Length: 61
Image (cartoon, rainbow, N blue to C red):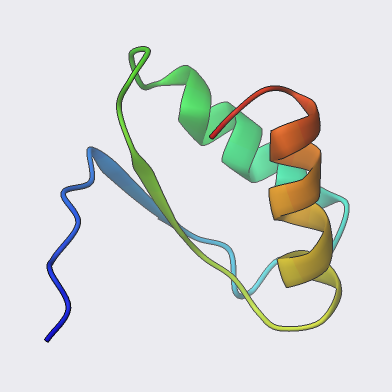
């Protein structure tokens, strides 16, 4: 049984295409404090490949 992860914000970008997906996530992150967690709902394919990689490149965990 998996343990629920506490999030401080949520964004659904399943209706958005790249590169706007990353822009929307980056804007949502600006509303959070350091150490807070953002849940991101995105589609398979290009978004699931590019958004996490781009966030990691900017030193997000």
